[in-house]
Length: 95
Image (tube, rainbow, N blue to C red; front, side):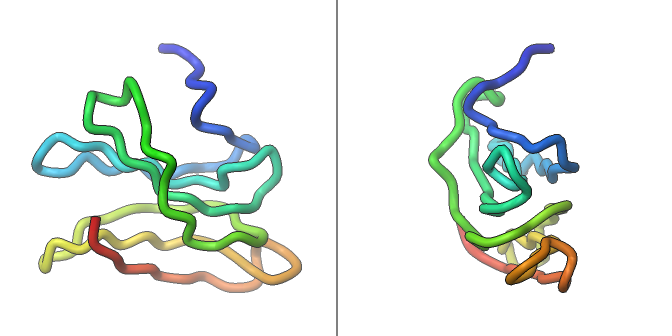
């Protein structure tokens, strides 16, 4: 186990998902504060990570990832305009 400096984390629960092709997705507030909910991809067993897809630039917190039957990725996460806990959002996207 090691600390990956690429995965900035405000000590907040993150989402992980291993895809059938062995890529790994990681979703978390990519900041030292609970903001910038980002999903990153690793194709080399978590050694390196993409810059990521920013889902929400403002306050954000806990997230979870799942793969839908149609092949899209789903990310359920907390977010808001002023505080991270104003609403829960489901984002669906293709890689």
